[in-house]
Every structure is written in structure tokens, then in C-alpha cells.
Length: 368
Image (cartoon, rainbow, N blue to C red; front, side, top):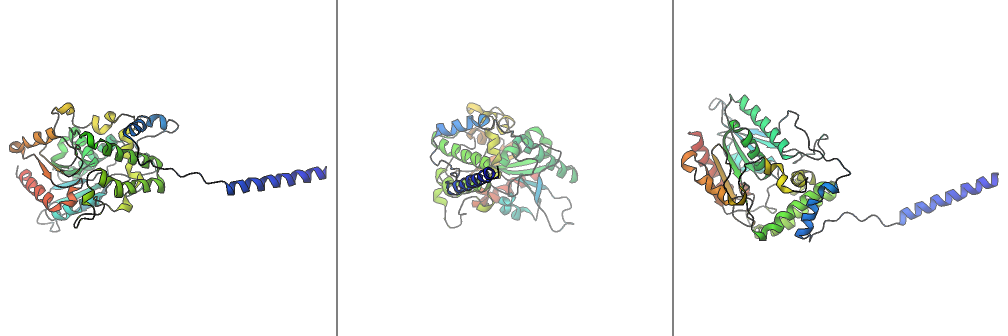
């Protein structure tokens, strides 16, 4: 009996050594890869298949718990006696940026106005533990509205001037539509309802959303490398901005946000854009100004609105009729639309020109 037991123990030891050897010599699983030449049908199929792809998981938007967005920057006139209650300017950044994207505007305005910049969750910081899937657009809008309401109340009920870019503009449009009483005026950059991209830009528009969505779902260092490589190498060329790279006076990556601060985690708005498999069901489309389909004119902000957009490269993020409608309100409330020869981040690339238009608009609005 003892002999049989010893043989069994020896055999088991041999088996364990064999398994360990096979584990050591077996090739490592191939790392996830991002297809660099995905066709339009492939990308659309991926987006439409997102609900089924994630059916074994439970993606959920972070909930609005009554807390506003974090205030990252809050500066104003140093001479408090000269202006006890300065006008509040509330800055809302977009993707893939952080509040510092507004540094040129804040430096220009802070001696005359109180400049407050909020941070979208997960942008330049980790996503909260209670919101691993980030936040859908309606939740971000509720958070922004709460921040604005608190600022307004603390400033004797004076309405606020909002300045917003990219996805921050969509969130701000949603807030203005629902809470117009918070707004003294609005300055928005480069995205608006009524956009109708030319067919030649469709691959680029789908591609950046595809990479961002896949990077967000991958997460970690792999997801970070995907989105950073795309921002630094592929986006400028596909969007028609490649000739601006390394041009004296221009940022190497176009966006003023340092590349190492651009992470997969901050790409969650693109997941929520396509979470149902249909972009037309995205909250930033269903809860913003309506009626702009098929070249028709729809709802507009109720407050005076200045819209600035770049004219270089990819077009279609903003609507032609949107600009016409704002320009027609010029005499009534000083609204308007300004074309600037720049890429998407015109607040950085053409800061002096942008600041001049903002100054003029603020002066007209504050005199009303």
C-alpha cells in the first residue's frame, strides 16, 4: 500500500512539473489590437453591436447625486473693492481636454471678471469608483446645472455667461434649453445643431469615435496608448489638419492638452453616444435644441449667443443654418457667428483673435 501511495505522489509531482513547464513555454496571449484600417461598414457594425457585445456586463451611467461638477479654476479681479460682484464666466471644456484648455481666455479675462472652469469627471483624473462607466450626457448636464445654480445663488442671483467647447458645448446647450434662467449669455465653440458633414469627412468622423469607444472599453495602458497614438498621429491627418503640425506657433498635437493627460477613461462620452447602437438616440442629440434635421431651422438659445468655429479641415460639426440664424439676431441681442481660420482648438491656436471677439461680445451683452 505504501509503495502504491509513493508511486501516486511521484506521478502527481511529474504531472505538476509538466503543467508548469507547458505554462512557461506556451506563447503568451496576443495583446488586443486596434485595426487601423477599419472600413465604414465595419465601424458601423461595431457601433450597432455594442449592446450585444456588452450583454454579459451591466454598463450604467453614474447617477446625479445632487453634487455639481468639480471647480478646477476659480480666479477673478485682485482688487476686490473695485468690483465686489464681478460677472461670473463659467468655462466648460470638451474632449480630450482639461480645464486648462481655457488658459488663454482666463488669463485675458480674470482681471475684469470672475473666471470659473469646471472639470468633467474622468478628464485629467480617475473616474469615481461609483461611476466606472462614466456619465451619460443628461447626468453631466444635471451636474453642470447644479454648479451654475450654486454660483448664481452665491452671486446675488446674477445669471452667468457660459463659455463651452466640443462635448462641453453639447452639455451646455442641454442646460440652457432646460434652465435658461441660469444664462446671461453663451459663447460656444465649433459644434452646434444642424451639422451636415460632407461625405468625404464621414470616415474621419466615424473613426475618431470608433477609436475612442474601443479605447474606453479596453481601458488601462493599452486603451491609453490607442487614444494617445490616434490623437498624435492619425487625427491631424484624417481631419485635414496635418499641415499644421510642427508649424511655428502651433501646438505639436493641435490640442493644448498634454498627451500624457489624454486617457482612455475620458472617452466615455463616445461610449454613451453609441450605447444603444444608434447615434440618433444619444442624449446630446435628443435633449439639445430640436428641429435642425434636413436643413431646417430649429430651436435656438434664448440668451445672446456668440458661436465661433474653425474653417480648416474637417467640417460638418456645426450647421450653416445655425450660423445664419444667429447672425440674423445680431441687431436684437448681439448674437452672431464668427468664422476663424483654425482647426478645432481655435481658443488656443488663435487666442488673440478669439479673445477680441469675446471682448466685443461681452461688452455688448453687459451693456444691455
